[in-house]
Image (cartoon, rainbow, N blue to C red):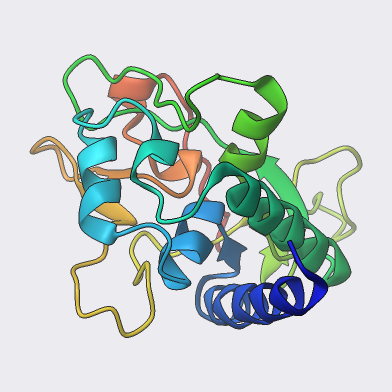
Length: 193
């Protein structure tokens, strides 16, 4: 990619990622690539519903551009002190199978797509009875259950969908929002004082 185009792409990624960071404290590759217009929201939903075999198939850019965008997003996230968190994407179907991002299934590229970048802002570390931070305790964060995927897109958010009648939510952006009965993941809610 020519340096001028790379700089323009980096600016577009920074704008969309900055908006996501300011509204949700989480930045995802799908959200960013949808925000720059390379992933149509309706097609992403079809992928989530298992109607599209792999996400690259619906992207409005070639593989070289997609890989460059993923690297630029990772660079931007590191510059802003965000923490990488690998997330498992499962389909919105009864079998809840893992979703694929790439045709080849390359481990490194799949990991880049699954990596969410999380802000340390708004996070709390549990404390012991003396009021000091407990050692070796994972940090928990309040992440909104729903939020717009693409700023000003005019479409319904695809970051979360209703659960299965049990009041739960199954989320595409964070495994801690997933219905624990169906996924086996344990949702951790921050303790309130």
